[in-house]
Length: 350
Image (tube, rainbow, N blue to C red; front, side, top):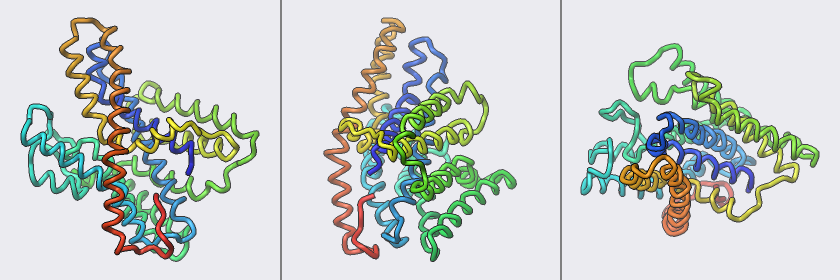
């Protein structure tokens, strides 16, 4: 396991929490878009995903179908559980949700990772943060196509080429269809950048003298990423967040290869629970925001004091969900798919 990458997963998930504390920031008298930097967590996830997919499939350990099977086992169970929970809330307590409606067609598309446009114009599934999972599933499919190539480099090149072609088509054709526009966004190139990094990871420096230069470079890139909305206002997120994210992940890998790794068990637990953080945090931020609106008369200081409360609640809920729901559901899915093993060798957890 890459310990530093697990740390970055935790950081990425916690960054996204900031996005959904925007209302709390407003109540504290801050600009409405002050938390926009938190969107960079998704870009960091995409780069990590591209790299990890290459690394965990090296050496022909899996067939394309085996790869897709493992991805389904990892992604689907918790996402479906949260999606069904949100849909139930939309049915029985619609006032607790905002733009989510109890539309059965939207539910089926959400469960199938099929993007659709809501009445408000957003390409959000029933669980609105699931839009990024639609990109992930698209990437897994393209990656599996590349795995069918006889040589590893050819497969990586094919998958990257398909991603580049999609972005080029979007820029040249500017499709009117909302689904095509969704898939042709430049941010999908972050998967390609991660794939290239994964293919080159064994060639990265590993001598001890590289640990602190790598750490400092990663920290500088992280600062640039957070400041992206100020440094590059109006720039595409693939530039604003994606490029620094590639540097951050590269620096983290080099630092670990050089002997500087995030070994703290609490950090690793947060990394393991990062998927649960991502899929459940909005329940907590919504709860804290509702409380803040009732306490708004206490002043900006009280609103800011609720930020660490929100993060503590997010972490506690996510760890509980990870241990009590995500892991059991994943194991159940693994057992259900056991007869369908398609790996050339015994399957490995991804």
